[in-house]
Image (cartoon, rainbow, N blue to C red; front, side, top):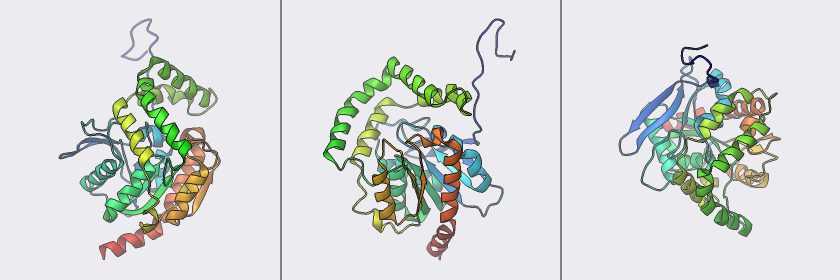
Length: 303
């Protein structure tokens, strides 16, 4: 029995995965940002910036890759505004603001240039970061993401119907219960991540509902087709070939626009959990693949 338990109590401590050190980075005019910051023993190793997806947190999105990334790189993982422990502001969420937030954190920590890894909604954020702050980004690694999110009439209708209901759904006890069932079904008792389910469910409850709805609206309007091919930044891409949320053809269109070589993962959109080891290996390989070009880009910019 731990010191926190009372005789006869059924309370059990929640088991946490390995998480790197946390920092609070205060940015004047932007707020306080919760980040995970791992510093590699070799200062010559590049720094990776991890940008999570819609409704997620940095930990929830990337915890399955933290250890493998820590062996090879320094990295910073940030909670976006309204997500996880990210700032709560009166301003409506925008992808441009999220990119500027990330840039401010990178500058405050003095870790530039970074290799930006963006999963799902993090993909548009990393593209905007490279566009708006090219001096801070030496390469991009988009994952399970797209150039645009509502080009077809069907997609626009889905967004239009889904977003008004989302705020109510996220506040509903029924949704919380259904989410719990879905996570438990995905990470069954034999799955090596099953012991972290209580912690994961807690992470899922950290979001600000209004900001999540606003982020969905911002994502539905995102369209990088006019400018993605002109970014001129080294890139590599992870395509989740069984993805039902971001169609693989859309992912491939982004890779083509960026001139990015592709690494495929036969997984759905929740690949970071469903195929954690494979995802971790793929992410490390993709980052390593852009390191030479990233170094060349960084040295050229400094020169």
